[in-house]
Amino acid sequence: MQVNYSHSLQFSGQPRALAVVETTTTSIQVDLNEASLVSRDEVQNGGFSEAKSIMESSEKLQDDLRMLGMKIKQHEDSLKLLRNQKNKLDDTILDMQVTLGKYHSSSSPGVNKDESHLQSEHETTEQILRHEKSAAGILCQLKAHHGSQASHLSLTKDVLGVVATLGKVDDENLSRIFSEYLGVQTMLAVVCNTFEGVKALETFNQDGCIDKTSGLHGLAASIGRSLDGRFLVICLENLRPYAGDFVAEDRQRRLDLLKPRLPNGECPPGFLGFAVNMINVDSSNLSFVTASGEGLRETLFYNLFSHLQVYQTRAEMVRALPCISEGAVSLDGGMIRSNGVFSLGSREEVDVRFPKTSIMLEELESYSETEKQMIEMRWQKEKLEEDIKRELALLNTAKFNFERKKQDFVKFLAQSSTYATQHQFQAGRR
Image (cartoon, rainbow, N blue to C red; front, side, top):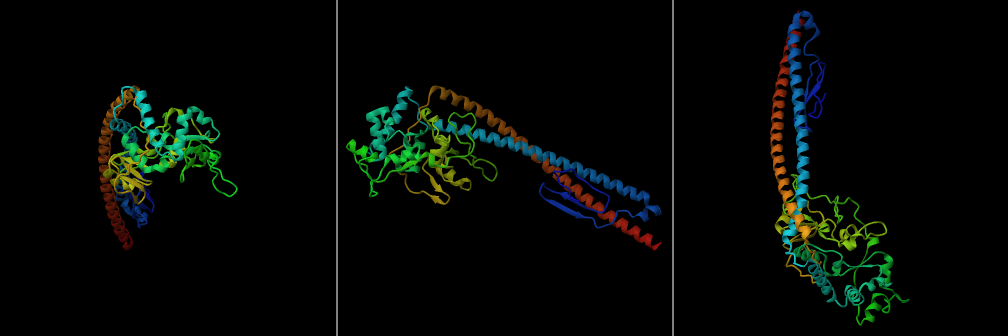
């Protein structure tokens, strides 16, 4: 019979194999080959008192082992509970660190938050307009000249915008590194809701050549521009969206992605979060959903960034390599494109970047409250770590006592077997 820490210890006076475990997953078999500790003949010949003493000692040892096994199970359960509580605290603290890290590394907010907000978007628009022969540049020029009316044109009514204008970041470093990671061609990609919108941007004549008088090409010609080379168009309804859960009670509907973990269960030092969740979607675009009900984050930005991780420094990113499955970047310029693909050399200054989010007064108050909460969380984590150390020491002591008691029981079985053999031999001689 097998005994495990996770179950009550059971013993029998009949022929059996006693299993004594050292951990929850490893057991040690002790085979009892003797038919009985005390033979029936021995009892009939006056060995009753000796047999009774042996049985009582056996039962006491079995009870002791059973109690020690129960203690081990209790300590293991307590340890599991404490570690789960600590992991939850680690996740909460990490989320707070990401929030505070983005705030502390961003530039100081301007006195007039509205002007700061417009200036940042204006800079991005100016950067796009410098690419005057690109599809993005032509669309931005159309919007600049015709304003809100541009979105009602049959050619552009399905166009949501350009990638660079559909998201914002809190930090200049994030803006630089994300723009470099995507590259200028992707930053200038035109985003359409449906494939019908994609087809409207470019048409072909009977010979299969591009019709320069219609679509974006015709629009460019009408304002004295020419559309040169290829340009990217992203169709949201044809993308494979994120299929998981979202962060609870988050107005931005950030994705609830599983955080990276080292073999010891800790989150890698320097990990700031996932790029897809560091993009802020404007309130005007938060309500947008595709025909199947997905928003910009779970379609556009998830397909652009997937599970790209963000670290504080290159050194911390490299140390976290075992936890990186789909690329990573660091604020000081480190970049891993995918497993085994490293981007080395000097930074490439992409001239089209995401605009920065303005930090408002109520957000500053929220950051202050977050700092207070994080101090409290860290204190709770330190207390939990002390509780884990104490519970681990109690578990090790219980295992040590179990091992000693097991050895005593094995020794007792060996002595009882010798005693039974001797008396059976004497009974046979009679």
